[in-house]
Length: 128
Image (tube, rainbow, N blue to C red; front, side):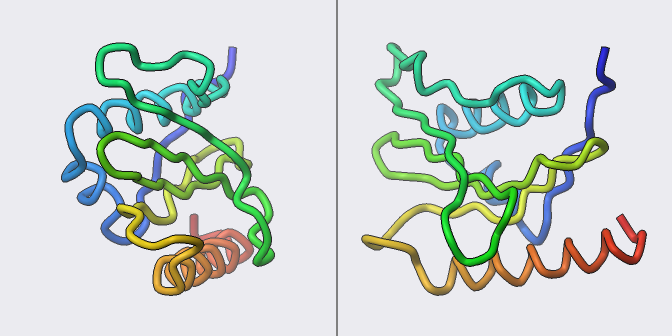
């Protein structure tokens, strides 16, 4: 049996998740708990019939962000959680945000890239 992995929130990610609507927060935390036990996190095949929430979990495309995933929760608005779960010991939540624009937000992607680079550097130096 695989040991439960820690979830490491970078920046204000944890506080931002806690401020999401309750239904969205619960879905995000349930997905992260599944990942902690190395189970698939995507519940896209199990629609939330109570809240009519749509959930998808896909690799984040492009931008040399290997191993990153984007969890999307569409409630009244659309929420994103970008994380990396390729490490055996931890899941890193790089960034989360409420989607406000079509396409990728430059500001949010810059935050993801900066935290991804810092994580890679910290891991290479044995800091985390």
